Each structure stands twice: as C-alpha cells, then as structure tokens.
Image (cartoon, rainbow, N blue to C red; front, side, top):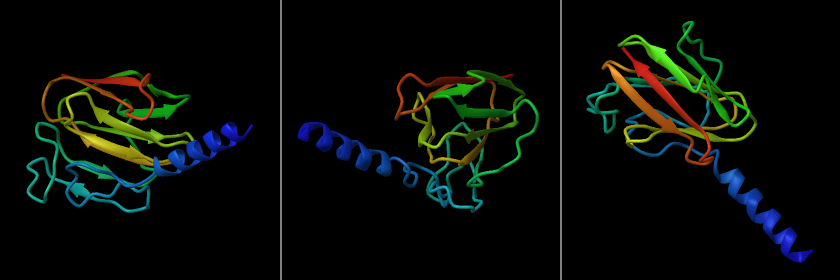
Length: 147
C-alpha cells in the first residue's frame, strides 16, 4: 500500500512537470501555454529557428487553422496522423486533451511542449515528408507531407 502511494505521488509530480515551458531553439517564442503570440524566423537570428522549417507561432490556445492544415491532439493520437499540405502552408496543432504532449520532429528540428489547450503553428516552406512524435507518449506519431 505504501509503495502504491509513493508511486502515485511520484507520477503526480512527473505529470505536473510535463506541462512546463518549451526547450530548444525557439528564439523568443514561449511554450508555457499562456495566451501570448510569438513568431520566430527560420533563420534563427534571434537565438532559434527551425533550420529548413518556416516560422512558428504559439497562440496558447484557440488559434484558427486554415481548412486542411490542422492537427488535433486527442485520444493520445495526432489526428490526422498524416497531413498533406502545399509548400509554404502553416500547420497548426491543438492539444484538446487535459494532459501535456509534445510536437517533436524525429530529426530534432523542432520540439514544442503542448500543455492542455495549447496551440502551435509551424510553416513548412520546403517539399518533403516530415515525421514527428510526442516525446512523452512514444506511441504517438505523425507525418506532414509537403508538396
């Protein structure tokens, strides 16, 4: 019984820590889920950027994505799992769950913390297939296909 209580307390502390700010090359962009908006150029001239990826925007929740460019995080999956967009379009992820997730490029080019209700947008200026995952929940995978 005591071990179970200790394990539950540790899991609660771990879960609370998952919803924190962002890490990695985001320039001045926040990732804490606050209702702020920030945009960082791909060149990384302000201490970050995404290399071959475009600019990013974090609206903290409720952002509006154009039709066909939205990915919902719900039911411990990215939906749609594969999204096809035209070059230069911005993709918007929205965490519709009450638990934290991440949107993390498999190649490490971007890594955004997604607390409950958070919205994150990223432009894809080059054609290609861009795989990503949730680093907190390893069964969650997605792909952006840019043409």
